Length: 292
Length: 292
Image 1 (tube, rainbow over the protein chains, first blue to last red):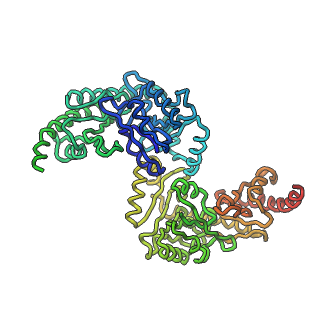
Image 2 (cartoon, rainbow over the protein chains, first blue to last red):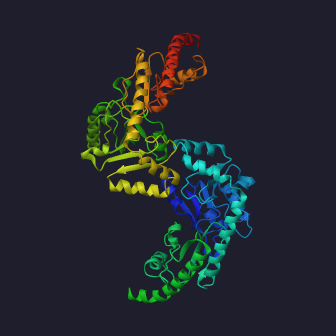
Image 3 (cartoon, chains in turn green, orange):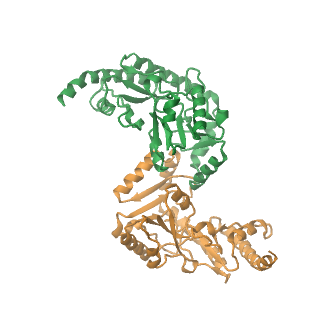
């Protein structure tokens, strides 16, 4: 068993399935900015079969950046229950408002328990690059990882060469990227929070946010309706229903995930289309519900 | 459980481990050119847990190309026991002496049971390309494969672009490659079979051969000795001890795998070095054994 705060990146399910692992979710909430719940909730998720907790910070899908105090709580938690702390830190360059990413590898108390999963694909906007890394100070963990790595022989050659070039870009590359994403986040955050029926704490990292909406009870239906039945002067907007990011059945049905990977002018227009659509949907739904 | 004729490509072990599968070997022998054993031996390997048999043709590490009659026997075998026939056909362009590769997908009786594993890396000498395929007419199999594929998102982008270019090379590319490898195989085969203590049937495909040697009882030791304690005018030769290609403990200890991936002139010299070394090793070993 592996504990994962939900909502979480959907593909963890696929990998857990392949590794014959059961995912045990721990709920985080829009109202708390999707920060970690109290220790009691974490402790309650542990069973005799638990081996690790996996966190992703900066987070996909929530954009939440865990505070140093949360990392320290996680360190105490994994020591208390003899677990590994696995951190997906692939978005570590994407932090805003002057916040700096802190790695679980910085936690002095759990040098042998901390395992970081990294990748070049977010860092350098190279989605299909398939070059990543597992980083740990635990020699047994690394020796096991190496066996699986050897079975796969190597990461792809051309992408390795591309990665070498990308790593020579230097810090100025990231400063420009960070500034641009922060602008995009601001555009979306300001537009969305103008709607009093939306619950959204300002996300501090990555390039996603989970948007909780009053008046939406089935975000699968809402997302489909937005694409198929609604447009504003010919423009449509696509959002990801959040249900797929939860392991708990029925959770996230009043939420969608948005990604801010488009330029600012397109995001501004997307927010107009989205908020107009949301208003229209809320107004139409009661009638549709009666008709059904 | 999955049945695999041994010797087999070592990495199958790693993947079986990941998939929580037990590999059940079926022995093939140098004296038979590593062709399939009789039906009785195949049948004896089946248990209630058997789900598939995996064959590799042209074969790594033996170079053996299965005859059409053998494929038909395999088709009858998997029908008889309700199994899948998985064929690793990544060396299919590498067949010699006018022999043509036949795929398990050509077997009319087992359209739903045949699964082919393919890759571009051998075909185009692109070892690190990491672009492959699973091919089957069974919709349930393909739907399961797709789920795992989706969890991995995509094969590497740059290698996909490289593959598109490579597939435009046309048949003349393979004719030249085949002719070159056949020359190399002939150089090695003729040199090795001049030694009456070597058992080697002319391999018909891929670019490997398993060489069985009288006078060698521990090919790990022999391979290490060849590299560390022997040289001919400064030249050394490296071979792969065959034990790693067997699942049966102790099997293959009088065998090594050789790959003919060097140009002819280097292979000629390598055979001189190897055969001189083998002779020297045979002469020295009895004395060493007594000394021990």
